Image (cartoon, rainbow, N blue to C red):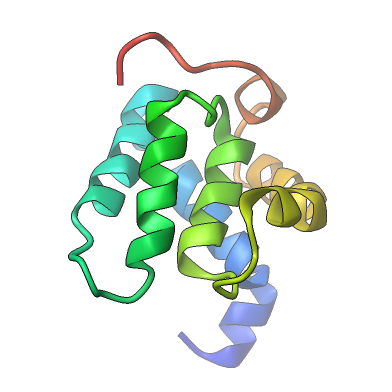
Amino acid sequence: MGLVSFLFGGGNAGLIAKSIATHHHRLGKFNDVLNIYYRDFKSRSNGSKNYAKAQEAIEMIDNRHIRNYRDLAVLALMVDAAPSFYQFHEIEQDFSGKLIKSLTKNGIDMNHIAGDVLTLSI
């Protein structure tokens, strides 16, 4: 992807929001989209780039801390885009506004972005 596309696509936050929205529009359920990311994190091999962050993400999902698309977008940024020393809550604080804007721009309603849409089974 070229620099101009990256910048006009909203950078990493925009790309993650677009990816989440694509899955949401295709599948329709938060848990189904969450499961795609969960399987991706689980597939990371020990010693691979971002393996430790993926393990943190798995734990957060297993402990039901990811309850909506904003949380999932923050998690995806943490694993695949943020410097290794950034933690979930720092990314949440710094990027929530941009993520919410990007998710709504990509057609996800606020109930799915900020509500509690996690159902009991993933």
